[in-house]
Length: 349
Image (tube, rainbow, N blue to C red):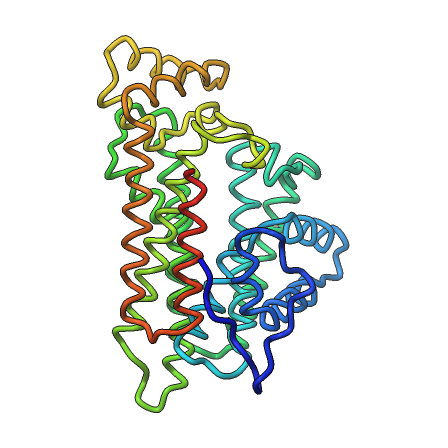
């Protein structure tokens, strides 16, 4: 999706030195200067007197992620006309929180591969990974204090607490073949979608605080809901890809969720709709904690319609996200948020 390019003082914003050659390039280019500042600030605030903290922190932060959550901070704040540099610190905070959750997730899941590279726990061990995750959480909260915005701190404090609850909910449901779609959606809302929601919500809040009238409550609420639905779509797509995707593209092994005993929507729906013999096979595979039967299970979820069901659920969430943008002022940042959602949904093709 093409959209207008932002300009500063009549000149086109300088292209970032780190703009990727992919469908997101136009979006990165729109906020190139801001993104460069975020990429500069992150390593500056990762400094520590403990060498291993810096080593692991740099490794995971520089592991090739798209940094969509910081991107949402930049786009949301600019969509409401924010002026200043607080959004740079806020974007770094969001990235630190996300990175901390990745370090902890990989330990809990015993993951060996993320984004096509060895995980920190595989490379250094579980204990250092957990402790560096704790360091990143505390560094994020130091940056929050520097922002001195209680509304932002309240949102992020609630988000980090709920994300932890989501992790525990997911852990409690490992191997639970009776897990409902409602419970699954609550897990992914807490575990994944809430940080996307917090990114767009806090970006909107700092712009609203700058307004003499307190900002547009409808636009702030819309951006909060946009982040929530975008995050739900993002996780549903990931769960769809776990049974339909190419591991070379995904940067992880197809069937990882099955090997970990996680029930995601494709399996939940298959357990509701597949023939009895196939449902029994799925239950055995979940109990075995093995992905050796991933090919047959992928065939089952495809044949019984569970894969299509998951795809449709992801599209519906993406459409809900896009619908929220009607409350925003028209312009390149609103168009970029639309394009970002389109890009995410294109992973289903």
